Length: 325
Ligand code: UT7
Image (cartoon, rainbow, N blue to C red):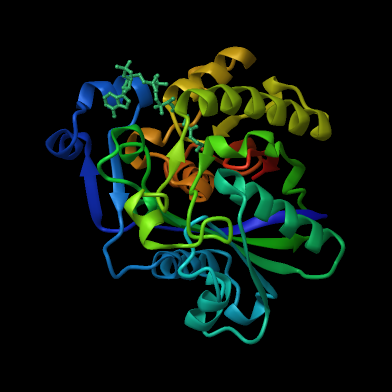
């Protein structure tokens, strides 16, 4: 008896940008980006493509893979920092696009840890028997809140969507453990300063570019490493597992050096750490489910394997989850 991901879907926008593109518009180089971040490629959505447009095909694929009817879905959780609008929620827009019967639907903002937060909520609703089938969608269009002229952030992020169907299953375990947490004391280190009630959009906030991502990269780097290590330890302990019991580690994909630091700490073999940062960059909440989808598609995950997901993001939020495939 357990809670399992029974279907995954993924969708990327068409526009692919390599590091050469940024060389042509910024004082940067393919060499710097590759060596300092591991990123080679990212995808950017078009002007008229909203988060719900990216999410929709991912949802259809997840529903098909799970072999369920759309009407089986009882709750939609969309995890994003780049919704279509502040309100109504992207979850409600997706419910309409998918033609679902009335269901509970809400957006959840937990930065790059969004999918793990969403999965934890889905797990608890299913374990308490409130719902049997939940759609968790992680979608980001970070290109829409990037200052393309700021080399400190412009090269780091991308757009994309992934959807997962979580279901009650009789004869399998699925999620073995989960852990979510936050430390709000350094929330200023990764922030979109304007557009909310603190700094409502005005001519001045636009002039000062406060509606873009602002990040203290060095400070974020340090906490990303230590908090993902903490989350990983917690998830292993809660599952009563050792690092050796894990078949594949999927950490948040913000920077290859962050991933390497975590792998070094736990002394994990390279082959056991899944990397997508080179081909998709950092897609915030969508990063983890896209990597999970990618690993499954590339045959790196097989039935019965234990996979550990760990993430860190704006807030700071952090969390981890062990799942048996
Ligand atoms: O999703 C969770 C949130 N995000 C993260 O986890 C990201 C965490 N931080 C990082 O990944 C890294 O700190 C960055 C990739 C953002 C920056 O790497 P770094 O090695 O920490 O570089 P730095 O900020 O210390 O900058 C070193 C130099 C600076 O030049 P000076 O001041 O030494 O002359 C920067 O101006 O590199 C310069 N620099 C660049 N040079 C070429 C910064 N960005 C670029 C660039 N191209 N794109």
